[in-house]
Length: 313
Ligand code: KIV
Figure 1 (tube, rainbow, N blue to C red):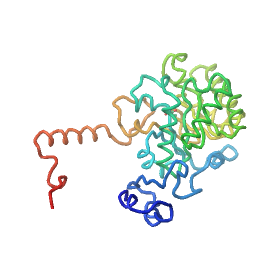
Figure 2 (figure 1 turned 60 degrees about the vertical axis):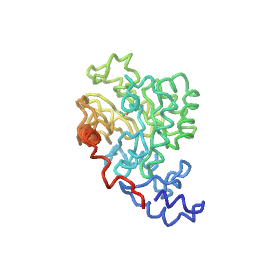
Figure 3 (figure 1 turned 180 degrees about the horizontal axis):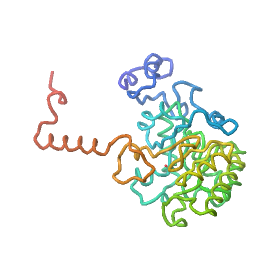
Figure 4 (figure 1 turned 90 degrees about the vertical axis):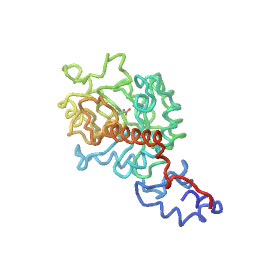
């Protein structure tokens, strides 16, 4: 496919038959140059939109729960896209991709570049990019500068930021200026140094009340959805009932309006995962077994075999 593209004359029309063949959702989807950042979808206007996501909750009820997974690369996005409503380019990429100890060191450049890869690899899901620590907290103006850069570079549809009432003014500022915002309450990993760890939140009455009122403030400020992370189940349910926009739970409750997991967690890429993660595969074992077989074949000179080597004509 890629070779065919290179031989053809430049221009969209000349490529049309080949591109048409790539337009079905498939795990063999090829990256082709027509699927550029400027036109991330080979099926124009078919991508879900933020208003459509917001409208999934009507009069406090979400008939069909929203499905969100994290994605950090184009290929990962291609594989997840058709199954999800939203792809989140989470700042969890700090730990998952870069091996950092927390999300604190993650930069705007990292988020923008991974966001662009995920937009290039998807054409159905709404792509949301996390605002990294330090890029939005000091003022609504700082948040607008950072968020607008993220959207310009990545082509994503909106941003997510952590924090409750303290961020309400910023959420309103961004939303009124064309930047959809997803909120994030409960366990907010960027505040790990204040919280003192990653334990579930909402166990005391004061903490529970604060989480519910934080979510209300974000909803009133115009957040189109709110991630509710690491809270005891009754609080997740209270939050879901208290706000008009959809809640997306992680370590929260099946009663939330949707769910999100870090993709690598649910794929079984890590030995240690939090209690709220369900492992749907054991990909770490699959990769380790493949690497062991490859290493053995290289060492015994059985790879490359006849099928993988070029011979003169
Ligand atoms: O960064 C992330 O992946 C997140 C999800 C866990 C919600 O914020």
